[in-house]
Length: 104
Image (cartoon, rainbow, N blue to C red; front, side, top):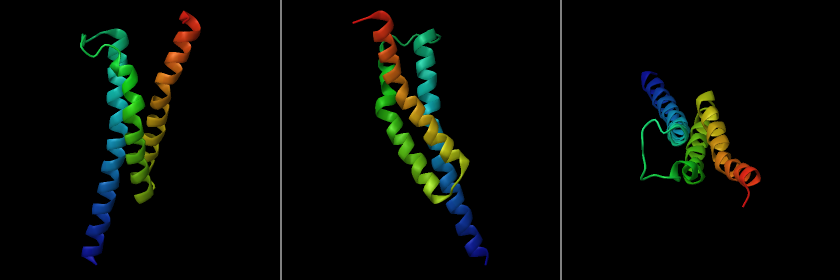
């Protein structure tokens, strides 16, 4: 009986890890975007890369969140999926809004 409880705990910990990892992507990318606009820490070599990185990295975070959600239907993974999708759409809206307001 004790062996089955330990296996269940390992599966829960693994899905929690996937949920935390899926939330880690949008948090780090959000901080980089915030730093891009406020220039708190000057990262001149990155230039506009923080705005484009969500297009490439958020799909990985969403897939990791989806795997964690399929294993153990927890809210942490669901929040990670939603945050990755929202952050994935940020560069698209940023460029559309910039084009509408600034032209060309």
